[in-house]
Amino acid sequence: MEMIQMVGLGLIATVLVLIVREQKPMFAFLITTFTGIAIFLFLIGKIEAVIQVLEDLAVRSGIQLVYLKTILKIIGIAYIAEFGAQIVKDAGQESIASKIELAGKVLIMVLAIPIISIIIETVIQLLPA
Image 1: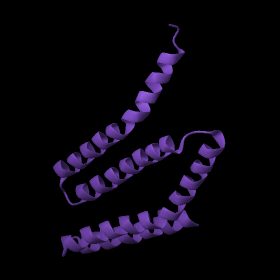
Image 2 (image 1 turned 90 degrees about the horizontal axis):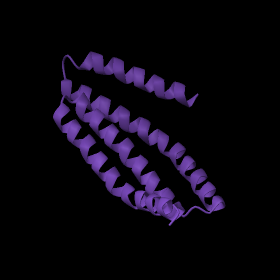
Image 3 (image 1 turned 90 degrees about the vertical axis):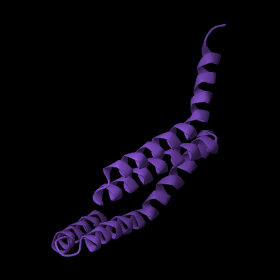
Image 4 (image 1 turned 180 degrees about the vertical axis):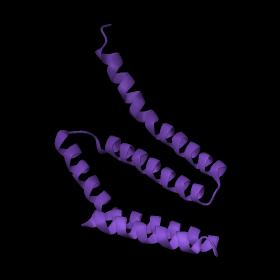
């Protein structure tokens, strides 16, 4: 049922954008942006539930929470960068959108360094001396 609501909201917003775009392009952009934000806010509760389940699994399996939190931050950066880039693309600014995507990739790489280091150290320890 929730998916039907989101699709319905998207369809209504699309029709409004198509109608308004001819007369007021700025309003069309605002409708697009607010629709995206509304869908994102609707999903926050679902995201919180997934994060809680993953944290519980990490605690039960003995995985340090710092690694899980780092991975969740990486996923969050990827989604936020994509969301921001899509909004900027909707406004017709492809160049700025590509810079947002680049910034997201660099931040992901920076956050991934500790995890990559641990993996390399583990592999080195497994190799015979």
